[in-house]
Length: 182
Length: 114
Image (tube, rainbow over all chains, first blue to last red; front, side, top):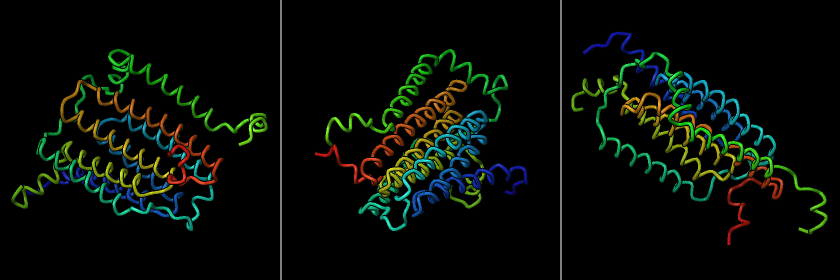
């Protein structure tokens, strides 16, 4: 059975993106220099965003790039630069039982794939037609109708997290420090 | 999946199952990162990787199991929001701990350990 070129494009893109995503995720874990880890994390996020596009979720891919790469990854880079000494290669970077940790990760992967094979050997891939044409439109409509209350709750959560982060990261007041000896 | 051509067939016909396998591998890598690294910032990165893999699972499963229109997308939006909230709180905690101990190793944070 032979394949035409157009049939091969989709698998090739999928495998390339998967390789980029998983390879850079692996590099995040094994790189000694944590700054390099953060840069590989950004590459991995890009790979996931591209996978979102192949799953016909263009809006979510854009959100992925904006929120994960534009906000979270940059925040992580800032945190690394603010805690400069710890990226020192002389500091031990792994826990003592790192072999056990890797083993647990492999075990989880094994069980998940085992469960997947139990579940459904081949589920057909739905053709790339979204009813109504615009997936982003129906996403927004769902957020404002069926999922309105979760949406509001998540907004409150985000505000609470922001306030909590500000309170946590704020330096302690000098007067308090003088009042009670630590 | 016995003959080589059939195997090639399953390899080249991309189904949501392929995406699920990639997502599971990403989850395992993130989990291993959380477990084997000492640096608290890197543990946070591992958690982000795991959340990313859950997003892929949601989208792939949404395609595969016929969820209502874009419900999977809605949940991905929620997961991304929660990931952002978790990242800012986590990094604020790490910075506060760094200010106190000049160190961000996870095994150094034992103040509440009895």
